[in-house]
Figure 1 (cartoon, helix red, strand yellow):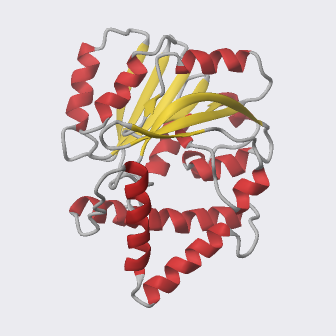
Figure 2 (cartoon, one colour; figure 1 turned 90 degrees about the horizontal axis):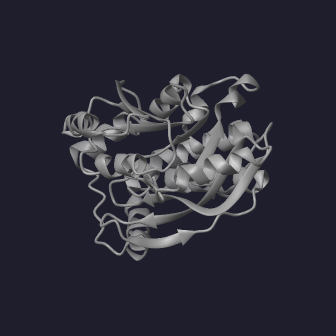
Length: 288
């Protein structure tokens, strides 16, 4: 089958989230979808639940494939992207969802009417109770702003045509949204959609929400910004230096407290980053 879309989902112990994520794909009006799940040897029921869903799946135009590979999330995503067969590719976290049943058909229709090969849109943030807590409207693309001050494009609302790889060589950077944006914006224009394209879940155990997991991403963002020509002492560099200084003086708890307060205001939930839990320790050792 020639797939119109490939959606790559990295998983590791996502039994609480994966079915809702997959259901947001199965309800799509769009036909011919390939779903590649790159599972980092989950120890819970993640793969069992996926296999059960595959058996029940009535959509013969949707292929769900599990690939077991012990990789951190962004490398797992790149692995899946490079093996995908769809005309248009996107990636979701297991705890994220497509916005509604028309999302992919809207994206496909838009690509048919524009010259750009990469597009992004707005998104909503949901909390651990699946409640929408905030809408983030897409902004006009500004590479310099993203390079030095902050990435405002959500990975779950980013779609691209596979033929970009005919022009720029594939690499491990393709699985990390910040690196992907900086790498491909050197050659391609990005098209901005105003529509909501995804639901991005933020909670105390997510890679973006958990303070201790996020420390690793702060370092990665600094390294990526530097790699693609970011300025000295830009926002990413300053964040990295602040964390290093707080760690040196054993004051990291101040940053953790600040993060707890901001997360609580955003998600409206009690926050526990579980820095001593086995799951967080494993993810940090794996470098997320």
